[in-house]
Length: 207
Ligand code: VGL
Ligand code: ZN
View 1 (spheres, rainbow, N blue to C red):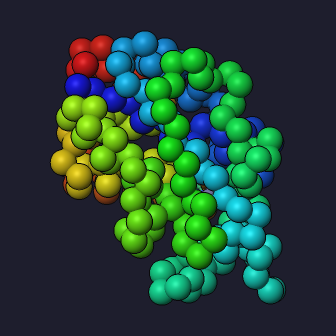
View 2 (cartoon, helix red, strand yellow; view 1 turned 135 degrees about the vertical axis):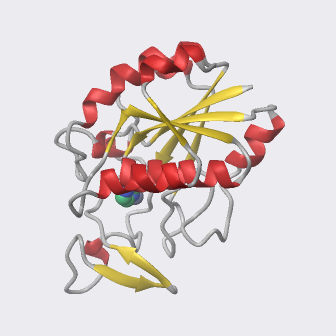
View 3 (cartoon, rainbow, N blue to C red; view 1 turned 90 degrees about the vertical axis):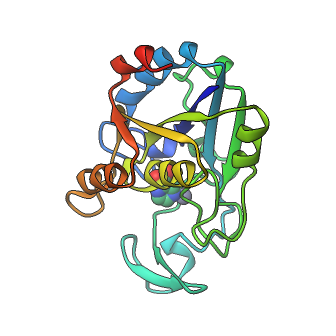
């Protein structure tokens, strides 16, 4: 069985959001057009407590974009975003949420960030998404969403590592590009790991 994983289609990553990803809103209609092709539609939701240590504002004299050591892992500091219960953390209304089967939240532990929908950045705890997909008999996943160079990339890498045949739907992703070329580099890295890069128009022929 095939599943599609919609990564972090939340207000804070969209236009005027706290951690705006350029041209993010363009992926929403693409996501809406793809969902009907899947029996199982999973969404991930970045879902941080207000005191999350990935926020620059929760450290003295730190700015977004700086990198610190957080419990032994390199952590990029972000603007405050996707705070649990805030408007910015909501999935965007333009997304047809009636087609979503289940939402997996991540980034809830203040001591460790979680880019992937499957595990935190230290692979210390699972979110349950991997077991859920296996229980449902999923063998192939299509990954799309925001941001290509962070949460989409790590979700696709973990999916592939867990043994799912993994496709990345390129035109349904946008990169935040904290550093120039991050989006381009992410695609190259995913390709090198055996993840297939496709366009949304190809999906009908692959499911
Ligand atoms: C994301 C940075 C911090 C993402 C989430 O969804 O790509 N990026 N939190
Ligand atoms: Zn986050």
